[in-house]
Length: 286
DNA sequence: CCGTTAACCTGAGAGC
DNA sequence: TGCTCTCAGGTTAACG
Image (cartoon, rainbow, N blue to C red):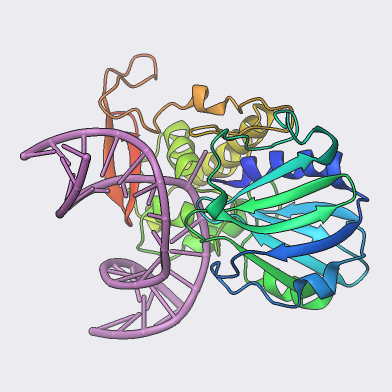
């Protein structure tokens, strides 16, 4: 489900609703996520206040107290639901992802907060919950590349990284060690705006190509955040509304449709690159 | 170090 | 209906 913009929208919603809420207890229904959820999570976190919620790339971080941080990754299908205890029966305005027929069997973790119940639902179980001490969390992020919104993702960084790299540019946009936060949807959208063919080898990109990659990575993610993310299934924000960036897609899921660039009369192609569907116009993306 | 592939999971939808 | 196949917003261990 979530790339950087969707996680950012979720973070902002959570901040509005549950910042400074006390965790009363945590119940684990199924600990078999990508990594086993530690049994100690309830003991570690209960009776503590969620002081803040932040985001780095596709990761959510619950700042519990000075040293303890809860790191959450939603994987491919993870969603967080918030149920207002007072409005339990009509919870439409309090659920971020308010699928009416949310299958209960995929509710794996439940946080009982003062005003809310926070539920983690994840059919495919590729997400994870991990507790870190402050220091070890920064070690964790030392192995994650900069996000496009960060100034570390600049022309020098990208050019140096691409020296002698034979892999195609699409694979690099999905490589979280190179740049973090971009996923399969935004990778295609970014390369379309750059007019760069996704199969182009990283080392053969020009200085201008690299400038465009830096610029559009940042601007497209920011636009998507402004639009509340992309809702291709039932992603909802805190007010129960869909994101709308899916209406702005220029190539993603537009196979065989006309290229939207004026003066280009190409058709959008779909090709599997590194096991992921990639959408592009081979007429204007060179 | 580099690049590729398989693997981790479930569910929806297409085609027969 | 029901079976099989493919695909889905992600990551990483293992291998040559």
